[in-house]
Length: 207
Image (cartoon, rainbow, N blue to C red; front, side, top):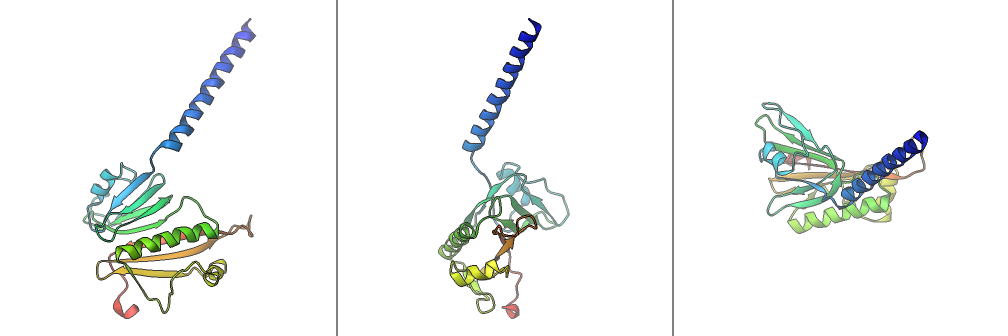
């Protein structure tokens, strides 16, 4: 009798655990993706409050950064030059000693990706920048990262092609694509996009 009661109790416990797991998976599937809305120069704490505390609190008087605690989409909220990225697992929001946002660094993906999927993200971001009025610069030394066989060959050779975008004297953006391989799986091609966005940091004589 005791053994039978114990088995019933274990079965109920297992059922409760499985039900909780199913509910969590359902919640994760329907939950809206977290978003970080910001523009360069606005107060970091304002960004943090608007983003649902995805970022850590400000460290007053320090040049530092907040790092997203969970994957979040970047919504660069400039009224004219804004754009939106896919969810990112790596996203940092840097701020100056006055507590104002001054640099964003990120990889607009939640995991390393095959090359074709990587290029889809790059192409979409490029289209958004062009629509918003951004222009490329340094194109002689760093030509556009186009979805072509020759550019893909460079990426596969781990040359990390890089392109630069700007909005007059307001913003500059750097984008590159890097290969990512492990010793355990040297033939598994995976790639990572990196973005840096800030006020202009590349001078005219470096163009």
